[in-house]
Length: 573
Image 1 (cartoon, rainbow, N blue to C red):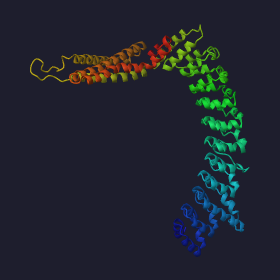
Image 2 (cartoon, one colour):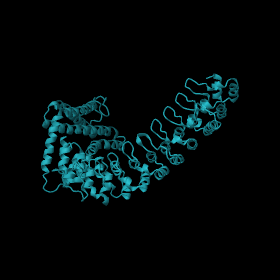
Image 3 (cartoon, rainbow, N blue to C red):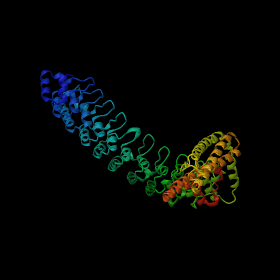
Image 4 (cartoon, rainbow, N blue to C red):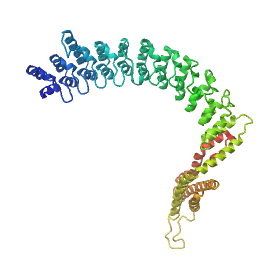
């Protein structure tokens, strides 16, 4: 491209353009290494008058494409230069009417149907960038553009629906041959539903009702996307149009299944309101919505089903494997769901899967006794057990299994526990040992029998400091010494070792807290009693508070279930 023409296009200098036209009209066809023409630059820099003069001087520039396959009309559509795009259409139309010929074809059709390297027409670009009025003019100039899809398989209607361009969608649906497809087999209705454009959904359902049951590559209709996205208004629009859509399943699940899996109670309520029995659909494994909610741990949805009379038929329905919702709740070991199910008198607690009850399956499938959830779930099932079932044997078997598994994992479990315990014990021993030789209040330097003795030696708080500091150091040293025997791989000894070190370590921590509190009290009390008390109280209470916090989950279970709850298995873990 001539540098004078390039400079004129960038600056919009029409006088230089006219001079170049007089010198040599062919100079206007020059291109840069990226195949951009002067008309491309005029559009990019928004020099409208320059672009018009250039078009009139050399109409073939309208069809020139750069290295990306973009014509000047593509660039105008992307930037939303409506007046420029209108002028390009007028020039192409005038050339056609005057009998002019651009490379032997219809200039208007060629310009409008040209696609870039990604398969986009000017209409695609105008819609993708939200220029609705420009898109309508492009569509009117060449309706056939509505049939083309880009490299992502997106049609103009799909793009318009996704971006909420209602006017464009209304115009596109009036063209019988217009394409409505999108990526992964989505339709324009999928796009409008996902992006929650109500007016477009209504238009598509009215003008193209077949889209309501159109499935994407995963077999999913638009209504299911409304359910998955918790889009209540979108769901209502689909159900008002055709309630039977609630019964359409994709490759595995129905809309009600998805609501159950995701815990969307309002979606489920809307589905039931329009289709009372849609909640009874089952997946490929014969599982209903209650099964799905239990497997995903959706407690609120389970409670919703339990309190909805229309769905009580789900409570004891087995899947293809024979598992009722109670069996699945036992397998997943979710105490909240088990509590909700067992509190409902309609749930069959004695239901069998083959020859096994929920308690049998719970014990057989779940790694026993290693969590609070397991112990709480076991207590719940034990409460609900039918009379005469031998539960003592199950508990005894659980104890044996724990011992067997502990023996298999004894080395790693002991090593981990010993590392943490010994580190804490050594730290306490170091601190308390140093504190014994750094007496609070210092030492007396007066000559006489008290020279070199602690100044606060006669105070009760100081004596409490010495006693508690000694206890903390001795207990922590004892823990450190006991850690030497951790290599003995005997389950009974290790249970005793763990219990002993834990008690000694707690004693050391409690004594160290008391030592700190008494030292502060001895130093501060003579001059500032209230501050001494304020510091001492939380220090003394710290060991008890930490113990209560650590044991609070067990305490809650004891309060909830009383004597039925047995934490002794947890003590063995």
